[in-house]
Structure formats: structure tokens, C-alpha cells
Length: 477
Image 1 (cartoon, rainbow, N blue to C red):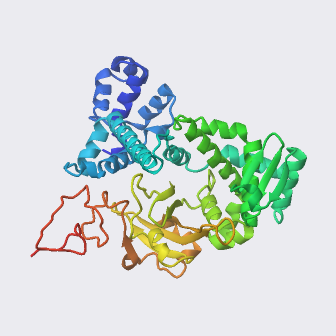
Image 2 (image 1 turned 90 degrees about the horizontal axis):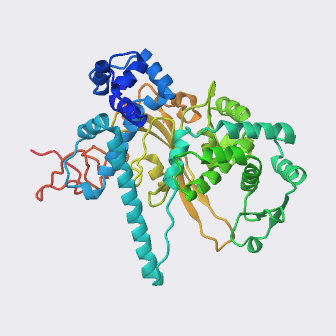
Image 3 (image 1 turned 135 degrees about the vertical axis):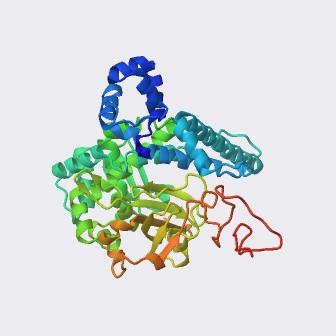
């Protein structure tokens, strides 16, 4: 019986949520109560016909019953138990899967509890730092980034209403693809009565974009490169013209705080800016023709390397899909600030990136695109590109920020990419680099860069035998 048909706990949760007895639900599904009982305890498979009846009864999208949800929940639960506070426990991956299979609601509650604990711990640490630094107590706002990431992943980083809004604007705004900046400035002034002013860095007071709704003036700092000026102007147009669509997306129950909804509005306006500067049909066609050459696409659409990478991940329109990419952004300390996956690769919610992954090693050769064929512990292989980027806003004394962007797809999709030219994709075993999500979740015992013991295998320490690291296992005679 296929694992995808073991949906008993989900059906039981739906029934209880609606306040139905087994008898009442069985009547709605035209089956016996005893048969429903067997289904809820995974003793009988769920047929396709029954799935359709369930979807109709509960007004569900069938994808909400997908077994992929269980896989995500198992991953989240394993990451929670990967915290050093659980180091003394002896949980196995199979035990966690069984908990999820038997009671998904209980597993979700544990993940939610751990997330709350982690947020509280971060708040305490930040508050302690403030007290030590200023000898004052201050309120610490709740961090919304995880909820916004969940919103993006839920929509697969594709927001059709914003795509349609940008396409409508192009039709009515008479924009010239070779001079989008002047067209957007004209549209702001003639249609929205907003004046655009490029101001000196000192007048901008640290802001790269500042909009004054009372005076209808949009200030853009002189420190921005032309492509960044375009992006910030498009962002503001999104806020002024796509408010209803942005509000609908930002009202998703995934976002539970005002700060999360505010951040979501900013992220969605950024999404619209990408749609505006890189219209879907034209960008999708160019990406396919140029075989996803990021730098060439950047020249054509006058966009930065990072902007092109982000836009490539949004090509999810039904019937006109691009390569399903994943994207990750990390800093020099390994902190992940952005992550999205349409390729199937799974990222860690807690902790940094694997040091063997090319996005981590990109810092060794700045500004060079590094190629890697990576294999996750589950056996899935991915074709990954990564390079470092530098950001500086200001003059000689302004700080320099260096970070790395990683973009990748499943190995099967790599043939569509210019970066795979010259690589025999049928014979790549000698090129594959084993990677993991984090040390605590990676089960490879012989990794020479292991920083922590794995949750999935027992720790075997011997004071008389030393590997490359304390937790790197070596062969024993």
C-alpha cells in the first residue's frame, strides 16, 4: 500500500474539526462506519474515489491531503529534536515518522511549541544583550521572517495577481523596455501624481528610498546603481497600485502578527517589482532561449545577479513553467537569510548551511560562479550554482556587505542550464559532493567537517582514537 494513501490521521483530524462522528461522516461518504474506522487507523487504503468525496465534503484542495505535508512535518520535527537540549534523547527517524503518522496534530503542536521556545530564547538573549549594553529594559519585537518564508513556500513563490497587475500596467503605461526608468517616473507623475527626486546621500538620511504620502514625493538616494533605482521605483509603484492584491495575500492565516504582515507587504512589493522589470512572458522566453544564463539575462533586463536569481524562482505559471529552482542566501557566518525551494531540496529552519555546500564555499573564490553536483542524505542529487555578491551603499567610508547566493535544481533539470555544458550528466558519480542540511540532522558519520554529533546516529567517542574532528567517525580494527 502506498504511503501516500496512509491518510487516516488527517481524515480523523478533519472529522473532529467539523464536529462529526464517524457515523455521520461515513453517511456523507457512502461507506460504513466500521470501514471509516479502519481508514482512520490506516488499516484500509483511501481510494481515489473516496479522496474526491472527501474533498467535496470538506471543500478541500486535494493537495492538502498530500503525503508531502507529512515529509515536511517529519523534517521540522527532526530539526526541533536536533537542538542540543535534546542531545541525551535516543530518538530515531523512524520513531518520529511514526509519531507524525499517528498524530499529525500532536507533531505540529510540538513543532509550534519548539518554535515558541526558540523565539523566547532569542528574545531573552537579545534582551540580555540590551541590558548589558545600555543598562535598560526594552520591548523586543517578535521576528516575522519565518512566517513570511512559510507564506512564500506555500505559494511556491508565485503570486498570479501581482503578475497580472504588472502585465496590465505595462499595457496601459506604454513602457519602453530599453528605458523602463523614464517610463516608470512618467507613470508616477502623470497617473499617480507622485514626483520622483534623486537626492544626495546626506539628504537621504540613510534611506535608499523614502516616500512621503503627504507631499506625494518619492526620494531615491544617489548611492543606488541604475538597476537598483529601477527596482525601488517599481517597488513603490507596487505599493501604490497593487494594494488590494498585496493585502489579500498578506491576510493569509500563516501570518499571525502585525509585524509578519508588514514584512509580507514589503516582500510582495519586491515581488511586484521583479514582475515589473522582468515581465513574465518575455523573461520566461529569454530564460529558456539563453538557457538560464544569469549574467546575460541581467544585461538584457538591466537587473542585478540577485534580482535575476529571484525572478527565476517565480516562473511557476501553469502551462509556462520554468525550471523549478531552489534559492538560498547566506552571509559569511553561514546564517541563512533567504530560502525557497521548488526543486525539492530541504533547508534547515534552525542553524546554518552545510560547510560542504558550494554556497558556503563560494566565499573562497569571490565573484566566481561555482558549480557543484550535490547529494542530500536521502539520495536526491541537485545541480547547484553559487557566487558571492558585494553590496555597498555610499562612499569610501560606507561598510561593505558580502554574501552568497545559491541557485539550483534537480539533477534531471540541469540539461536546460548553460552551466551544465561540458558535463556528462549521465556519468556524475565522481563529481557528486555529499552534503546535508545541518550537522545535527546529517547522518554521514565520516564527514571531515562535522561540527556536532548527528541526532540520527549514536555518538561513539574513544579517547584513544581521534579522527579529523571529535565527531568524525573512523574505521576501527
